Amino acid sequence: MSLELRNVTVTLGRGDSRTTALRDLSAAFAPAALTALVGPSGSGKSTLLAVAGALLRPDSGQVLLGGTDLARLTPAGQARLRRERVGYVFQSGNLLSGLTALEQLLAAASVTGRAPRAVRARATELLAEVGLAHRLRHRADQLSGGERQRIALARALLLEPELLLVDEPTAAVDRERAAALAALIAEATARHGCVTVVATHDPVVRTAADHTVDMAALHPTGPA
Ligand code: ADP
Ligand code: ADP
Image 1 (cartoon, rainbow, N blue to C red):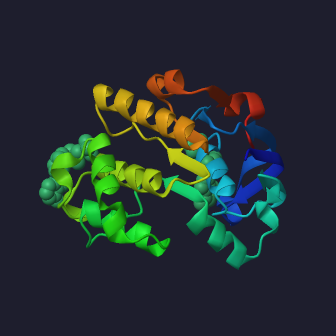
Image 2: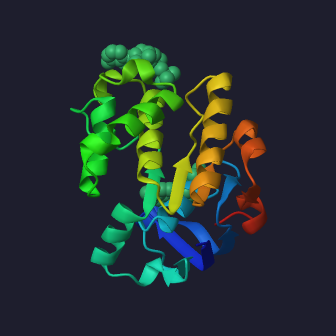
């Protein structure tokens, strides 16, 4: 399984705010590898993650995941892909505010057909690995932004996706935690053989990555 974008163009916004976020961009992301996606703010990293995860349909071009063009899937096919094959770890965390940290993981597992009881031990272990052993029974709305994003990471790793998309995982944590998170993502990638793309400004993540893709090299004169 690999991920390849071919000649992808994405425009965002309307009227005066209309922006070409990605212009005729081509990039390949290796299987069973962690790729650090780097580049200045506004260079299109988040947009690339959204297109790669079928959250956003490109204006033109192909988004090939293991040979399937995500841009051509029906809305139902895209929804199924998002549910079954892709793990998202975005800065907002996308958590259910009424549930505890542990319940976030159990609920996600149950939606994908796993019995919550069977995954409880693994969920607890993953929350400990992201440094949240003392937060299992805190509700998401009682936790900080950095903590919520780490719950989202543990949740994604529990589901063992084929494609793992992570946006700035170390922005809200201290340096020691950042190194631990980068190592955890790298190790999970190697173990499960997923394609992992991490948008980051953090040299610690770049060091842990197998490859680096630089938006500045793909868009030498800027996207717009
Ligand atoms: P990065 O993640 O590298 O900071 P983004 O993918 O967020 O970059 O943004 C790429 C470009 O698209 C930027 O110029 C940004 O201002 C623009 N952009 C992002 N979201 C929107 C939107 N909803 N409407 C208009 N322009 C947008
Ligand atoms: P971060 O730098 O990780 O974003 P914050 O400064 O936002 O951290 O939060 C610091 C600590 O305060 C965290 O351990 C978090 O669990 C706790 N905290 C934040 N908001 C709340 C809240 N509404 N209720 C209880 N604890 C909270």
